[in-house]
Structures are given as C-alpha cells and as structure tokens.
Image (cartoon, rainbow, N blue to C red):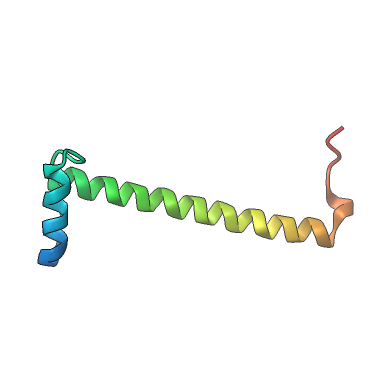
Length: 70
C-alpha cells in the first residue's frame, strides 16, 4: 500500500488521537483510511441522488417514455 505524507493541524491530530484512545480506530492511518472511505461513499450517494433527480425530471417532462411496471 502506498504511503502519503499529509500535514494536519494540531487540533485535528488531538481529535484523531482522542478517537484512537476511545477505541474508535486502531491507529491514525486506520482513522484516515476510514474517513476517506466514508467520503468516497458519500460522493457516490450524492451522484446517485443527482441522477435520480435528473431522471425524475425527465419522467415528468416525457411520461410517455416510462415503461409500465405491469
């Protein structure tokens, strides 16, 4: 797995270390990987939601294009 060097404000490091102390994460690396994964999932959900809104508008404008569910 590649390594990445990141500069992080002291306040965030304190929060990170607090979460590790509480047992929420095993290490700083584990915490950062988890947060990045959660952000990635959030972005996927946001893009899916945007697609649903677009499709809903298309369906309202052209209901004749909808496929009946029966």
